[in-house]
Every structure is written in structure tokens, then in C-alpha cells.
Length: 263
Image (cartoon, rainbow, N blue to C red; front, side):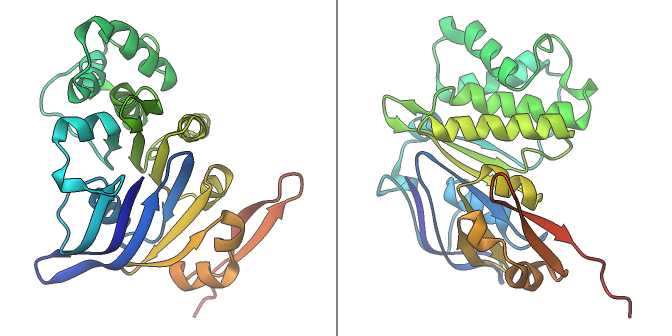
């Protein structure tokens, strides 16, 4: 598994994370939630090895992450960033193929592997279209297809694989939000590990095994949705009066924001 132990991340004199411990285990989907600027993206990037840490340790299968060869790490985990900008007129096919290149996959598997990834993101027939001409939601789905192309199976010859998704549902309509998270859920159920930053607490409750709440650079709570999503913690973290209930047929918590009192 990916493990962060008491890590700290600093940008200059500013401490963004301090004393955070979190693991991403095979067969599990963990949702990161919290306010804007709480440190969610920094934590995800530190866990997957994209940024250096100032203290603590990050490991994959108990091996220091930064001692693992980049080509091996690329086959074990794929990262969907919060935003992806391209300066050149790539087609959708070419963008998705970047995942194939990152993983060092053989060229003979290219066509089939890209087709499967496009289908998983609901983008059949989009291959020849220019990335820059797509809507923001469509571009996000293209980038989801790219990471699925990079790690097409939840478990490979080197062990379980991992998806790190930073706001994978951003800009998506309801149908595609559900489809994207169902894909992530299926990846975890097949033996892979998933860490997903989400802003929709109800979607986090529906799909995640655990929810980790990030607040001011620390973990304010972590555990199953039914334990973490409670009125007191969410009020403390988000500063909004919340009422957490449960869907009768599934015992899944849901969050109902209340109107802020006017001063």
C-alpha cells in the first residue's frame, strides 16, 4: 500500500501539511474532503510522490517512494490532476495515449487499450476530436481515460495498482459524476487502491470505504462515512450548520446544508 507517516509539507516558510498519516490500501476507496486550501491536493501529491516532503516518510509496499524507479512507479500508480492544460492541439486519442507512454506499454496493445479507456470514460468516437475544442467536463473525462489507460487493470505483475484522483468529478454532469466514481469503485473492488478528492459529501458517502477530512493541514477525522460524517465535525470543518441523516434503504449518510444565520 501507499503510506504517509507523520509527513509535513512546506512551501517556503508556509506549512501546508503537518503531522499527517494516511494510507491508501488495495481494495479500498478513500475520499479526501475539506475546505478549499485545507491541504487536500498537497496531501494527494505527497502520497503519490509528485512533491517532496519536509518531514516524515512516504512509502509504497514499505519501500521509500523516492527510491523507486520512475518507470516502475508509473506502472503502479496514475494521477489525475485537478486541472490539465495543453499548449498544443492534441487529439483526444493522443492525450489518452500519453497514459500508455507513461506506463511503457507495448505499441501492439495501443489501439485496444485506448479504446477500452475511452469507453470507460464514455468517450466512444471522441478519438479524432481536438482536446481544446471540448467542454471542460469532456476534457476531464479525457484525462480520466488517460489514467485508466496508464493503469488499465487493478492488479498487475508487480502488485496492486493505484489511482490518485484530484476532483475527478469537477465539471461533470450528474450522470458522468456517477459513472466516474462507479469506475473508481470498480477499480477498488477489483483489488486496486483509490484516493479521490471530492467536494460532494454525498458522493463521498455513496462510493468511499473511508472518508478522510483535511482541515488546516491536518487530519480532523478519518473512518467509514457513517462515523466521520457527523454534524459536529462538519460544522467545525466547514463552518456551516449541517444536518446528517441516513437513506433508509441503504443506511448511507447524507448531508443537508442549513441556511447560515444572518447577522
